Image (cartoon, rainbow, N blue to C red; front, side):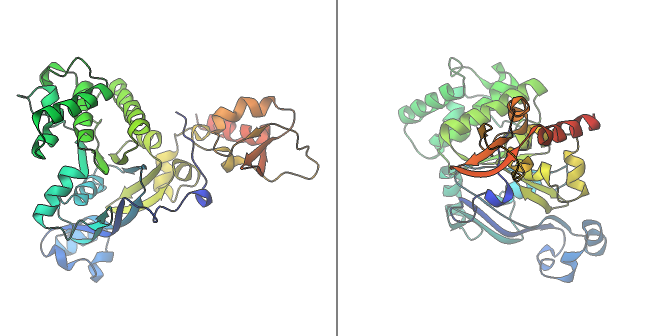
Amino acid sequence: MTIAVDRPDETASHQDQAVLSVRSLWKVFGPRANKIVGSPEADLSRAELLAKTGCTAAVRDVSFEVSPGEVFVVMGLSGSGKSTLVRCLTRLIEPTAGDVQIDGEDVVAMSESRLRELRRHRLSMVFQHFGLLPHRKVIDNVAYGLEIRGESKSERRAKAQELIDLVGLTGNENGYPDQLSGGMQQRVGLARALAVDPSVMLFDEPFSALDPLIRRDMQNEVIRLHHEVGKTMVFITHDLQEALKLGDRILIMRDGAIVQMGTPAEVVGAPADDYVRDFVSEIPRSHVLTLNWVMRPARPDEAMTGPEMPPSTVVRDAARRVIDASDPVRVVENGQLLGVVDQDDILRVIVAEEGKS
């Protein structure tokens, strides 16, 4: 697994062009749930809140933005609130408080008719349980959203065939869901989600029910499709390896609240607390950290004749070239020397990994 990422101070602002913007989002279940937000009880722990009020804060004051074309991963253990969060974004579950905007439009304030239009035209969801219509052929499952939108049969079938070809199901368009493997059924789900050309695609643990090999193939398929169609994606998972593989940024939740949000390198290289540190303890740092996490300033006595590499190069990919170089490798971006890396800098990361194994 190789992931190229940037350092915290080099990441672009995610507020300027946000496709999805979430501000101070809460979802509280229980009696008089709407009285909790803004009250002293809102500061209680989940267990204390339940004991005192009978309420559970499934999502607790969550804020983030997602930029165009970004893959934004929300992860956490069971009960962390991640699936409730993604359902609040489309009001499949009504938020208790807070603001959700998609393309600048307030989702929470939408009428029922406007919300239906949003779901038909600008949002799509891919679920763990595929939700395919068993009595309909693959091509008609893919075209279902277009049918709901009122497109003609010839138009929607032509579009559906394009998407079937895109997800690698050519030749299966006239089959039925029960004739397909789990991985193939999830490809149908992907094609159906893409068919409506949404602004944002939401994935709620879509691969959790698949066996490990098929799951890995489907992760690769999402990466390939993202490169080809460039959709903005919000991906929910409990699997850190999956989050690191797919995410441009990762939001980690616990007990309904944000614990840490950042790039894969930020999460692995600078965990916010012991909870995150335990999560990432088994992750090989050399597979995630980039040279801008291990570089150092050049010393006056060092020759600046070594090869150049960009700061986004993953440590594992740079290791052989750095170790073979007679002089420190220069980390250069846009013609500017940012720092240098020598074999000691690389080996420090690799030896630390071996010490954990």
